[in-house]
Length: 418
Image 1 (cartoon, rainbow, N blue to C red):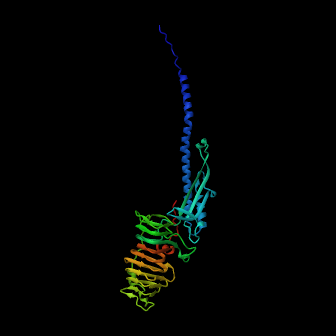
Image 2: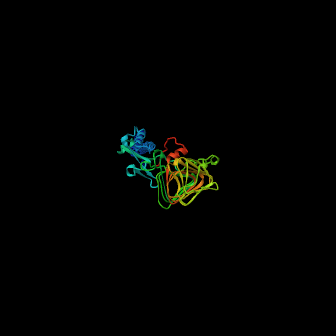
């Protein structure tokens, strides 16, 4: 008979012991992976949260610091430090020694920040850079792998009074070719010059903004919603933001109807050369002649100046031109050199401002094409349908007259650029 050998089946207790052993080995193998995943889920998330908190802190510091410019660099630094340190990064607020605040200048095209110490003291700084750095922030599961702490560093740069047009307007476009420069000053603080040069020489339009040639804009360049800013050829520096306007510009209303009947035209005398300046309801000047206007309000149907002729104003003067105007020749001479003392309203289709003398005044002509010709400095502001600048045009925006035109709530509007 065949012989069969019976094998003893393992008892259930022994099988369970073997399964426990296998499970223990698997746990030992998988445990580092699980801990690594925990470290990834918890610690990496914690680090991202720290970075977000640090970014909030430096953003707040940069915006607060920029809001103090250009009045006081020291206040810009102090305010930046104060507001950055009001924010928690982890379990502790950002300490002053963990924060660096630098006042300086921002150039858009190269996206470069320059400390104020490296630039001309005659120009107001326009930006604040805040760097926050917090070291040795403890981690959780990553300690298992020998990583017990991390460092978090972030920076922010904010521009002073940026993001709203406070300068030169070309309602449907501009701005031409040649050498174009803008900056700003505040006539309430005195004449344009060292210690009174700012960064609010904004160029703005509801349409496209185009430059050809060499451009230096110490301010913002803002186009209409859905439009573009184009710099073709030459070189360019923009010391502000380049962006779309948040909404369409609304220009001041020009209405010459009252000035037509209520003006000081009867005070106009002969010119310096003894000529009658009137011609068909307008002013006509030639051949080095000069017409002096006493302070008041004037209404002309046109203006035509040629041959180095000039119009001289001696005090607060408003001129309504209910037609086209050519202020060429030697141009308009504002004796006070305060742009608030000369305002030109125009309802015609075109204005030409030419000559080599400085123009101190305000041009408000939202339905008129304005052409700036020659090598001249323009102090004040211009609001036109289009602005065409050729030659070498330098516009120094007077922040005082802009405040009068559009209201000044005294508030700054800083904008983050990085």
